[in-house]
Image (cartoon, rainbow, N blue to C red):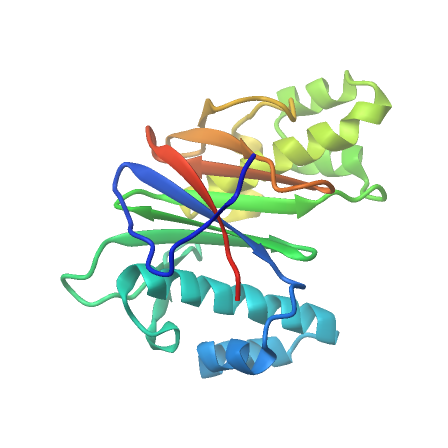
Length: 237
């Protein structure tokens, strides 16, 4: 899967979904990162125990602001956000501004940002972890059919299947703006890591699901109101 370099002023298109791949350890200028954040975001960053986690979180938030500001022709620091009932963030834009919607996910040294015009999106990325208690987690959060399918796989294929399933379910729940733990068991998605674009019915409605190849060691998925063309970009500080 190819990730293209974007123009400085990307254009939103109601027929497209844009996904941005954001490296969090690419040596971004920390002063520039902090300058893009709100005071509240800086306070949240200060609560991280480890400097690495703090820097990665700040870089992801600064990238989100930079990306959205480029579409809107605004200053990154001037963007304001609010949250829906399930906690999903949205732009608190003035009347007449483009109906730009987005979703952000990050894990390890990688973040993804999905952007769409006039349609909801959800994205998730997870770093593959060999020490994760896969069966225990699946029994807690997956549907009965998903657990059965996971247990039917050879043990050496379970990790890839688990994280493919997990990221797809998270992407759907995030697209709907639902509370994640309460919603995950209420619907099912494919476990095949190589599954192509498909339709999944979430707790509230149906979504188009796409698998994202973001590089070795990660699983990622996108959920969106379809149909739409997906375009992939690389973010650089």
